[in-house]
Image (cartoon, rainbow, N blue to C red; front, top):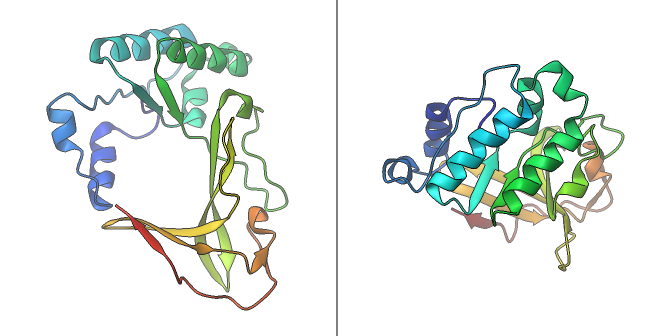
Length: 199
């Protein structure tokens, strides 16, 4: 379910990074629901997504993004945004559907704040992606914030998105203050040795 770009734009962007989704759309394995119209009620959103999930037997629903969802809601529904979002997630998970959501983090460069609505309790797993400044360049950084009831890596790593896929860089252990976006070097930068490619 997309609240920002139209499906054809998603397909174009996916192709640019090596993900060819047209066949999945064509044979019904992937359904894209565009929900950009404004002033929707949460019941309308629940109905649209729920019906599509039931009709396709979906095991995974991706919502991009929660910021766009909030904008699409009618003003009086935004006042109870957290409660409405809780209903949406609970309705889907009770049907056995895994929910993948994106949300724009507040970029204050002084603190790590994942959402202005304190909604991280809804998620079992949290991944943080953000831009950081390294040696006068903007780089992308990735880290696992939490995985409920599971051990996980606490490393913060650089990454790139290329035409052939996702390239995971080395552990940024030479820096501190990475989550602020303006890290400080604590030792010599070791480069991208040991980088991994995820296609």
